[in-house]
Length: 369
Image (cartoon, rainbow, N blue to C red):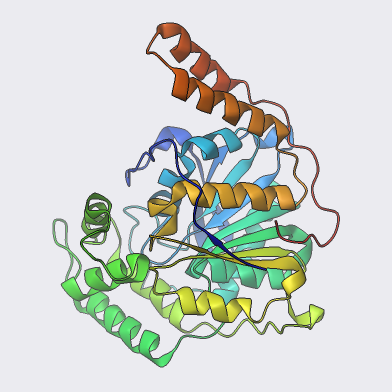
């Protein structure tokens, strides 16, 4: 089923920040067969046996720059009171990471996927909903194909199922060369060609009617002052050497057993990749969705993405009745607020009262919402 979502409007501003809100996360260094990775946990207390959403970021980003602003969006903050959120960072991609040792052999995409199992064992996770963007979506896809019992569903943004094209390979090889050859010390920046590529990769073609403030935030971020250049070059090299996922439409043994939602933004350079991947998925458990007027969907259209994620979670069998009641009451208070302290107090209490567990998870293959 193909859907183009056009009319869901955000009613609350997104809190955009690329600085880590350390109070929101519990950070763990987890040892795997392919090196140590930093994992951040937030949301509901895992001891309460809450369902898990596991995220994986795209190239040039990490759990903060890729997901923090989106999960600060009002609807997502409400949802996280009933879900535990696990963010995986690829080796060396966290903020201000030290250079990986010269002797370190960076994991392949398949090996990065294997690290997810170590994370699941560390936290005792038996099943989760995967939420990946770009390279992270490809990594989660590999894990789901090899470990279907762990994955309830996949929510994939700008995902590709094929190996890199020649043009992608050449561009990324140039970026890797510039990142490795540049002598970067404190206060210096990435080469301009790398900055321009990362902006294009995430936003697509930048025109005058785009969100200039947001783009400037990421332009400054992609200058590289908090990103280790060598570590990024290793991640880029692993991504362009990726193999095809090997999925075949009509063959359940060579396809996803869970529900899959492929999401792209109409201004993104990755639309064709998602279309090609969708053509190889089984239509009974997959949905393709394109958002309008955006390139970096989580930042430019958080309301639409939040709505799509909510519907996808409900399609997996999770009952969000209490969430809907709280969201509705918050929106009414937001519309009717006259600035009095009583309204502020009620609004604060509403955020703190979403404490009932979400019931149910799908017991078999579930059609997309």
